[in-house]
Length: 633
Image (tube, rainbow, N blue to C red; front, side, top):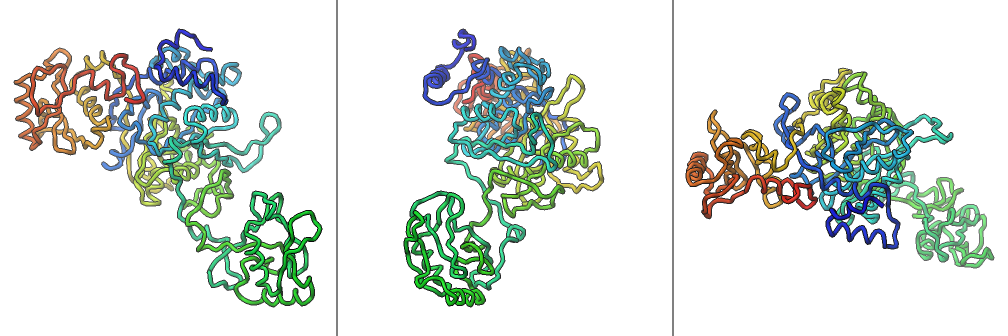
């Protein structure tokens, strides 16, 4: 067990949950440092976000919709307060613990805000699995808090941490909310891994925030989807393909022989299954081949078989062969030459429009198609790791150093399944930006308006910021069509690039300059559910800024800030109130005033007052008493 003294700091509801875990009958996840890992998310402090205009790209709509956020993803998740509970899908590809691909700082056990990125965890570190779980657990906690009730988490992983990740997700989301374990083919060429076993697949674990409220889309079928359908018998019901008469589950009443009118052979259900249709229906269908059938025991230890009433004969074979030469074969047929097993017809018009994904995705092509195929999810293209690396090289050029980039097709398919046309995708481990590229690509292909939020840090201590040098560079080239191989097409759209800066706490807030406080107030005001519908637009009076007015909301009410710096007047006084009403009149705003200040020395019904720093801390999801992150904030 972790240090018992740490239990004193846990909320009562978390203590109750832990007691249930340890005394329940189910399987429980336990690892050294778990109690501390569960607390880390509550201790992370949000940070201010500074826009870097020189790294922002695209049209105004794209910039307003999409975001690349540079900084630690744990702090970023805490800082994305206005998005909490609003994300349709978190799609991400975290470090796989393959040795040297993620860092861990032991100081994070006590203070997740410690700026040291820690040391790379080597493949020979005996505590590598524990460190990886301690690294991931608080991030998974906060990812769950970001999702809508109908939201979905899809997280890529390989065999090294598959079981540990699955256990954590089962605990955090509930096993009943596990949507899928998708197995996708990452390589076409077999290679021998450690132990002599060829590893050609990786996984995507998919969990719903609330399974009852989550919808999995069926993608529209294309002509390519229908290539397995034909009409060799000129059936008036249109295109059809061979269907399976055998059900997957066994039932004694459906396990019997059917005699072929063509050959007299007795056919049984395939494998351990049973015939999938009622016996009386099957009898009616096979009789359409020209001969009467009856139920009869044939001494095979099964229920009575369906056999030719007058026995198999040359006459019954001729009648069946004659029927085969005519149009519109019966629903149950025995192959184009009559020599096969009984099977059914599956009509294109009668099947469900669209397609339902299966849990194994393979690829028969290595090129990226202009349109996503949707023929059969049994062999659907998902792309391979080599495709992802080649795609990245084509866009940004050689030398990027990424060899395990997720293929664009894989990410596009996942987004299509679980993100509505105007939904939001969040990737806390953005890497080279494939998720953002997938969103932009789908918007072009389908006319949707999905948006992305990407978080990336890279290795800034080496001057190697993936967010700037790779993530933003790739997506800029995707937006503008400026590919390194000169074969890209501009997809349009855009994104705003922001950097996490000073952490938000009472001390930091009270030392802010006015410009910093304006950004903080505007962000804070739009962060809570009751004000989420507000459309906040920074205002200026000509070329001169207002003294107090900083924005307006969707109800045409002004938001005002009484703050010129820590050593200036920060109080709402009667004189300040009069100036605020004059600015409201000049801007044509309603006479309801949302005022942020350190103190309020005025009582009036038309002022909605927000105290600095307490109200801002609360809106940022921080407990005003402890300044720690709260999921409910």
